[in-house]
Each structure stands twice: as C-alpha cells, then as structure tokens.
Length: 589
Image (cartoon, rainbow, N blue to C red):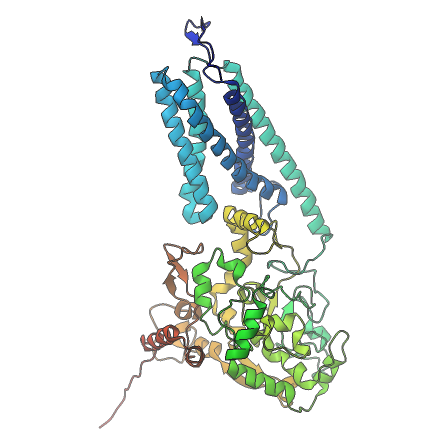
C-alpha cells in the first residue's frame, strides 16, 4: 500500500497542518469506531439518566425494586457488547497507527495519546470487573471509576485530536456531542413511554401469569378466591365446619386446596410447572441420579435445582449441598420409610379427607396419599407443588431426590401466620423481570441472563431475599409442627417445635420466665446461619463472608450415612461450642 503524501499547509490559526498518515483502511476503521463511540455516548447518557431518575424517584422513568423493563436490559447488554467491540477496534487501530506516527514524533500528541490509551485500558478493565463481579453496592467504587474513566476517555480523545497535525474542525466535536445527547434523550423518552404502558397493564391486570418465574410479593389479585391461593379467605370457606358459632381455628386449611392438608399455597392457587422449583434441574443428570439412588438409596453427587444459582453463588451452593435441608425428601432414608408407610398402610378416612378427594382436579390416590401432603409442604415441595404427591412416586426420579432446592425457600414471599406446618406461599404469578430467564445453563441466553443480573442485581436480590428471611418466623413455618384432625383422625397434637422453644427462651428476649437474659437478642439465623468465608468468590459475599447455608443442628445420622466426615466434624464442633450450660444453684448441705 502506498504511503500518503506528506503535503503541508497552514491553518487559519497559523499552525502547520500536515497530511494524514492514515491510509484508507485505517480511516474507515476509525470512522466505524467513532460511530460506535457515538452509540456508546448515547447509551451511557441514557443509563445515567435512568440512574438519576432512580435516585430522585422520577416517575415513570425510575426503576422499581420488582421490575426491569426489557428495553432497559437490551441497552444494558448493548452497552457491554458495544463497549467490548469498541475496545477491540481501538486496540487494532492503535497497533496499526502507532508505528506510522512514531516516525513523525509529536510531543503534544504523545502526551495526550499515551494517557488516553491508559484511560481506555482502565475503562475496559473496570467494565469487565463489573460484568464479572456484579454491580453491587460493595463494588460501587468500580462503577464510579468506570464512569470517571468514560469522561476522561472522551476528553482525552478530544485533546489528542486537538493537538494533532491533522485536527478535525471544531464543530465536529460539538456535533458529535449534540447528536449523542439528543439520541440519549430520545432513548430516555422511549423508556418512559414503555414504562407507562407496562404500568397500565399491571394496574389493569392484563398481563398473563406465567408459571416458572422468580418470586414476587403477592397481594390482591391472583388466588384471591381459590382454596389453594395466597389470598384465600379460609375463615369464609370453612365457616360452619367447626360449629355453629362460625369460629375457625388459625391455620385451618380448606379441603378443596390441591395441597391439603398442607397449609402451603401458591399465588395462583394451582399446581406449578414440574421444573418450577428445580430450574432445569429435573432434566440434568437424570440417568446419573437414578443410578446413584438405586445403588446407594439416595443421590448426593448431582445437585438438583441449584445449577443456575451456582454460577453466581458457588460457596452457598457448596454449603447447601451438605445440609439436612438438601436431604429432606426421598433422599433421606428415615423420612422415606415414614412417608412410605403413611402412604401405603390402610388408613381410616375422615370428613376432611373425603372432601379433599371429592374436589375437582384432585387425583383419587387414596387416604394415605392425601394425608402425606401434610408432610410434603416442608419435606417434598418439588413433588407437592407439581401434583406428584397424589400419584405413585418414583423415588429415584430427580423430583423425589431433589430435597429442598434453592427456590423451595427463596420463592417464598409470605408466611401466613405462626402456626407452622409449612404455612407459606410460593410466588408463581409474576414473570421473571430478566430477559432470557428460561434459557438453559451454559447457553448463550443463559450467559446473557446472568450478565443482566450481574449488571443490575438489585431486582434479583429484592425478589430472592425478602426482609422476613432474617426473622425466626420464617424458620417457624417448617420448624413448628402440629398434627391436626385430617392427619391423625383425632385432634390437634403438638409436634416437633423449635420455634416456640426459642420464643420462650431468654435468647429471644421475649420470655419473662427465664433466669438469665443474654446481652443481645439472637434469632435462629444468628446461630444456624453464621457468617462463613466464601473462598470461591460468591457474589453474595460481603467482606468475603456469606451466611452459611449448612444449617447445622444436631442431625449426625444423615452425614454418617453418606460418609460425609467433614460435615460430621462441623456438627460436633457446633454442638460443643457453648450450646448448653448447666447451672446448679440453691444447693443445701
């Protein structure tokens, strides 16, 4: 390729102008890069305007804690994609450009070009850090660094061109900034218009409910008059069933609920999709799960229902994988023996079970199968909410070997009351706010889905981490048990009840009968979910620590059966760490 002629001229300012050293190919490359930079300018200003609207609460442009418009998400992904493409183009331009201009060394161009290139490297590095490590509050300093680097990069490019021997007209930069700003305002207006339309749909209830979505706070609407729905009026549905006074005991369940006698509900009041609580886990490693369950009696090697979560929460999933929660269903031989006997042995029916079996849509599976739903609200939610408890159960299936999956707890958006027995709601009425939510793991859609979550994790955190998750009442829903007449054909009897024991102890600072009060109140999570190091870089970690999902207690039988000596040692250490103190006083000789 022929070198360009080095003709010289004098500008209006008296400064010597030299012919450009850029061949036609590099000029085209630079033109594409500048055009892409214009898109990045408009895109960045739009994202900043949305962030500002969030900060000041400017409706309808602000993003709430439960929704994330697809338009915004597409531009968020476009920001990352276009930014990486621009970085590649500028790197290619720099490699080709530097040897040519070095022969015509220009001090001012060097003093502006080198810092400009360094700022560009910092801009890309900070953007990749946000992409990989999530834009959380703990990483907010990186966001500010990234934003500052973007401003410096624009200023650096303008300064570099201004001092070069082939300066563009001054109006070109003004036109570039003007077009970029106008485009960003247009994007912002479109964003607001789409948000207004989306809000109108939500208020009118026109959006269809979709099963298989992330959780959202259910209020009035879905399931309002449905026996298995979140907003059911159990007192009205059961009025007269407990005597002429109309009194209905707390925690009573309408027999017409598909989950009866479990008090658990769903937002829609209906069964969930088979893979709702396992998120693609029902089809992952089915052969291996079945083979291990047949050989050992339970499956422990394949982690069912945690695959999509593990990509961002590796440490938490590692902890959960050894917990008693994970081995709560048919992967627990002790529980399996109990539930199998309950379902197979002849049982006398009662008026409640008869009403349940006569309800529309309920499988006529017999008294034992119907009564076993009382257990499955806390032990087999994957089976219960998919309608599996009313049928013959394949104990070697992924659904039976899943135990309590991540969403079994994190899809709960309401605890109905303090009566326990699984008295919670699984939110299934709202679509996932993130695009590509239905994409399988390790697919392009799954990668983009994870990228959006990492770029805007606040909505995901709001949906998956409710405020009441930090309260003992949350644990009480399954750690407070009472057997009712539909289950035992007798009357209400107290069962295993850790919640009331805690509530009546000094630790809760809620009991007047205790001898000693600790210095501070402690809830269940303080002892059973202590902070634990996260060596794999879990994105939920704060200062390198996450809340332990081992849920250590006194169960040494399950890890013993699995040969899990590490978990055995942890439980022993947990029980020996000043968990019990015996005080002897008022002793007389």
